[in-house]
Image (cartoon, one colour):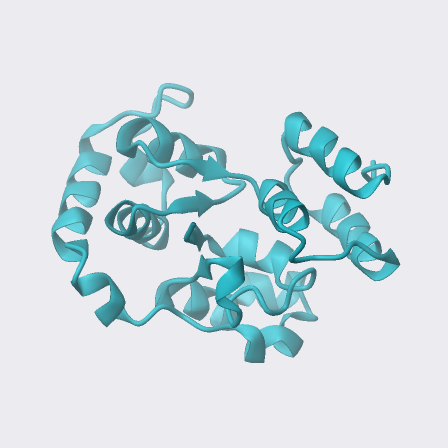
Length: 189
């Protein structure tokens, strides 16, 4: 299964699995816009000083790979719908809550028939409810890799996870329980 990753998910996952975009078994893709955010965003440069070390691990999906899947037409619909649909939680239009990159990820996910990996609640609601995309948390993606034996959990990865827990959005409880079952380790608190 293909998984389109948002920039925050990439920041969380690339240290745990640097090969996530290079090895097709992981099924991960990133849009050029996410690559640009990862490499150029001032916020990310300040908050994630280590990220330059992983730049070589990134590989964006060529636009030509989306063209054969009706991406441009879907993107027009995603953008138009975001102008009209109100987030039931915040009362704001999705166009006011989500970045252009977020909306492109929804369109790419829909066009490719792919899952979307994000910890952003508004993005997850828009993609799941309005576009019927399965949205998974970054920890759920780690769990998927563990269950497929693509990753072996070790102390180094656990230290990265501890750092991740301190600086990122909380992960869903169901994913935490599954992580503990798969690794036999307690999820950092």
